[in-house]
Length: 206
Length: 229
Length: 112
Image (cartoon, rainbow over all chains, first blue to last red; front, side, top):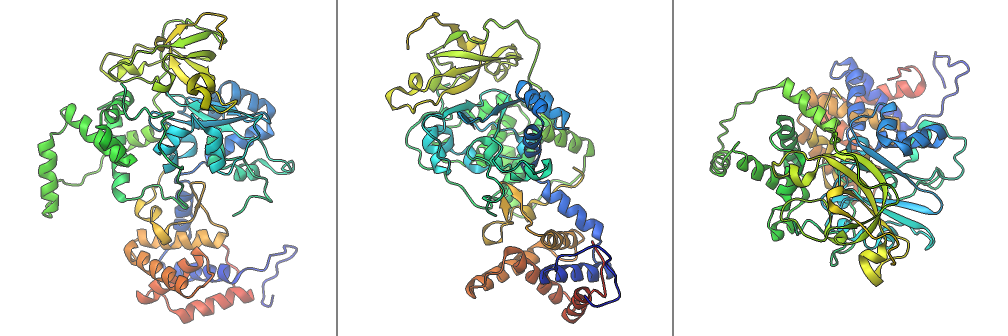
């Protein structure tokens, strides 16, 4: 790079044309006082936290790295998520194991752990899911792309009371080196409902 | 009640359809319905059990042809009218005024209400209450009642008159069947009950697919110990 | 949660729908979040109406599809935003090109 700036030992990835252009745009607009960088930061934070399963993902990631937390989570979900600052949900956490896969539904309406994973997707509230998940879970899961061996027990949880259910998915193989934050990024809303499994990073398509 | 909402196990619905990049709301009015619901909650105009039962009372054909937020809107109007907060005539009059381009309402802000609504959104009201000691323990075999109450209940039709096993004792909770009808909380024991798929669905049941339902003690009777399946 | 997202923005539909994965907004790269934030922040400050930006975005997406361009959603967003700023006389394309060159050459290095 030409120019007067010394970057010292810090090696920077070549920046994409788009990234440079956006930086230039921000620079000009800030200069003209048309926008402030703080405002941009705030907007991004607000919309990223808008609706989303990131709270649940944090809980799952913690359970993966901390066996004692996992035990507490399975014993008393409500108290365990409060440890991480998530309150106000009476929660039951059900764990997937090699022999057991859990699936959550509300046949009578659409109860869902909102506080932890945001608003439910339309399909979760659909008549199709509500009627079929309890009766033919294996077929429904296959439609979602999850093919389980016949020997796996599928436990369906019909959320008929004010308790909410969260599936603790299995940690994918090959993630031993990942930190908690990186693990949380792998955990999907669908996996916490039970219609998906968590894929290892190489397989997770964007 | 034997309502259309009670659809666990029904045949005839097709594939579960999924939408890519699904927005949180598909139309602006949906978000307004959610906000109105939170406001009603924050004001304590209706409790969650009443709100569920109001949706259940929709005519089946209306229920099936409405979207989720349409049902919520129907529920809001039904309960606001029943509770005497608005009348249907008022509502219709206001709709005509708006259609004619007049809006008599004056915007105002109410930070305290907003705070309560945000709290309602972020936190759930706890439904656990003190109640009588549970009758059943983990491992007990139970039989669900098969009678169909006319009002609100959380025992699904597909699990009526069925044998199950207690897998968890949750504690004591507000009883929806009473709470939805202004009969007080009548809190008592709530259990997680496990049902064998074959006993629910018969021959067409998938193997190894047990269903677990959270059920109140009043839905349950003790089952004879060594019941053969 | 001090701010609440505008549903008009968050819930755009069809081709203009914000990319989501798993119910969450997706910014594959940091600049995408920045351009999103910039556009929304300026719309909040009433530099332009959201409708205006949205129609530019829809036009840009339509144009790109017709031309068979492989541009991504946020590339199209960026083009739409630049076009909007030009139309409103808020930004001059020449100035932007020049500023971009300054960043590219390392003459400028502001980090946001």
